[in-house]
View 1 (tube, one colour):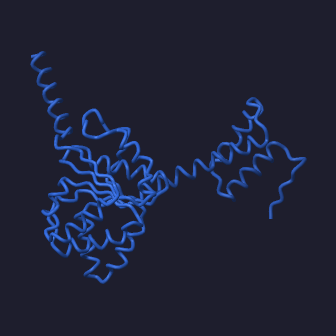
View 2 (tube, one colour):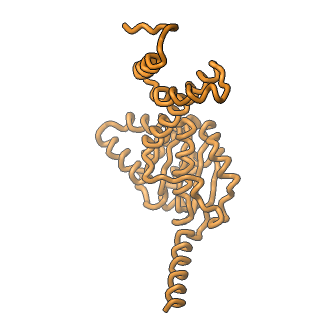
Amino acid sequence: MTTYHRRGITEEAAEASIYQACQRLRLPTIRSTFVELAATAPRDQMSYLGFLAELLMSECDYRDRKASERRIKAAGFPRQKSLREFDFEANPNIDPATINTLATSDWVRKHLPLCLIGDSGTGKSHLLIALGTEAAMAGFRVRYTLAAKLVNELVEAADEKMLTKTIARYGRVDLLCVDELGYIELDRRGAELLFQVLTEREETNSIAIASNESLSGWTKTFTEPRLCAAIVDRLTYGGNIIETGTESYRLARTRARTEASTAEKAATG
């Protein structure tokens, strides 16, 4: 057993003892910063308590950052997207103030749904991933999936007598992000299984979806009218519906680049 003495210890021995203690206590940030901070503390007129607070807060910040990274990785996003990267000027249909409010993740805390509806290229998947990332950074457990992939997984789970376990797994996360809802027609069994997931989460956890179909067009995806109405109710009641529009800004950007390239070639030709 190692004994640490309060007095009569050299600076070198003190550093070695602190380093060893940080290893045992698993404090990597304090271990890597205490020497530099101790050297600057007198110059900054830092008290003993201030010095200790600075060390402990740096360790807390590191752990929070690593926990956020783990939650983002566990969410299974297909790519990184952030709200800082979103071009609001390219899509005037989307209100920045509304998105910034959603970025606080208060809607996740209140177990409310979110629907992002619009044509391809209008930014709905970008916003879905970015808002899901914000929720993960805020401490919520998030899971991303494609609608078709989720339904296929539920069908396989039902065939293998694992449906209850699978639905419970999707029910536990704080925010379930379902992308590309409406791209394919679901048969009655697939729609019913998806409805079970929505019911499991109703008023207990949030769900966010991105769809290329307006709510009135969901009958193309969920062909049974009553089931369609029930699903629409689960996905919209008390939540936010954001329409991203019909004009693809990705296509507009591609056209603009093409036109600029053509004009440049013509000018230099």
